Image 1 (cartoon, rainbow, N blue to C red):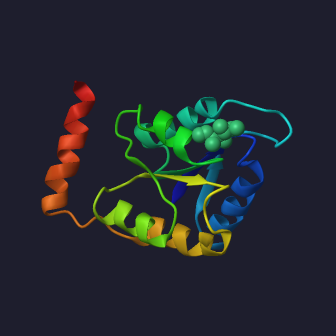
Image 2: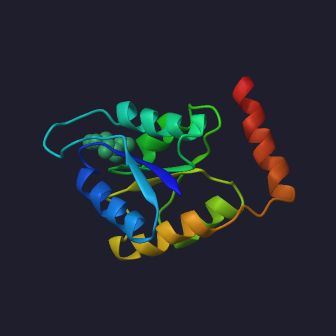
Length: 147
Ligand code: RB5
């Protein structure tokens, strides 16, 4: 699976760790920056590029990293077709996929337990959307895009 990655300076080192895990799992991370941890950058610039890669179909999913995950989720959810969820643990990742059909995972490098990262990535990639009543709800979210 092609997975877009982006971070700001705070998430830069962690982005590399995520990329390595994804490659080890047989996936193809596509890096939309930033390029180092020393230059302070604005998370919307990088989150937007990766979210657009999901919207266009270039990548199936995206993983966005900043200090809290919050800023990245705010920018990603501005992009049509994107359902970004900030997740703090394996449970929220699993439910984001099962109930919200999340296609963008936002992680806060200062918030999550790094020991749980691999489990969270696996759940994000391998958990299917439950559909059923959740499909109706997700449809309502997507309908709100045109308002
Ligand atoms: C950058 O200092 C910080 O604001 C950013 O990484 C993120 O946490 C924003 O939501």
